[in-house]
Image (cartoon, rainbow, N blue to C red; front, side):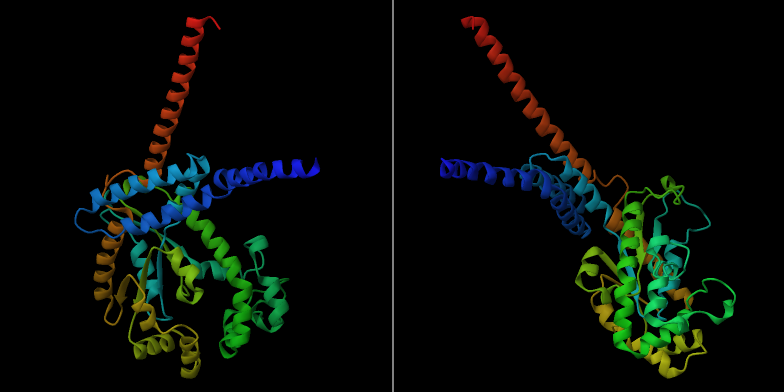
Length: 360
């Protein structure tokens, strides 16, 4: 009897696991992955891109909905996956990345209604904020760094304060000379930085950040993350960004600019800071777009304007290019639900008709 009950429960348990996977576990991540891959495909704008992109979205929507049986979690996953498609802006130290970031974010004085808008998320700013003792609450790494590297990293210009700020120059001198300490610093700061960055990407991707105003006047909106160590973050970080822009310059010019920007550093200290990152030419070889900052500011501005228009076209497309993947998925779901409801309604009418004829 016990053996019979166990054998009878196995198919039930197997069916329950299958139902749980299909209805609860898989739809959300599947929606994120499918929408992310789809967005990467449609960014490759070529002739007939508008027609092809809409065909891709419709095909993906039909396959996705069929796979997960119109689960709403799949739709939520598609929304999240579409929102989490930022542009990554990176480069080597002293290559001019911050200048390019400000040029991308700057709006023209003419205030055109069809001007592209780049929303910049500054990862270096996040890295600076988490070092402060009282700004980000539980996301601050102030106490952890003081405990790990000692009070010698604190600023001596703030004597008498309860929590003097961390002197980034002192901390940099420690970690740039010692690879093990640099890895320890990264293990403490990177998880917090990534957490805050992903949260801001999602908020900006869904356009939920109240700090961004007057976005309705812009034709195309692009979320761009200014992140110095994108490639140093490994494959997961590269996969996060569908389009990567690298700002590059010649190595000798990079050293010259760094020393000029930080005259208190020796040339050897400047070389150490440059050597702690992946060579900028290797980054440029892996980028989708490269901006060369080897000449004057005027030349850089021209490159940025061209890049801004091209990237906005790939990411956001032309105005009224076509419905977004989210709406296509929702439409396919609605059709499927309507079809299912109609079939059920027809079955009920058939039962009523049979009972009326046979009197049962």
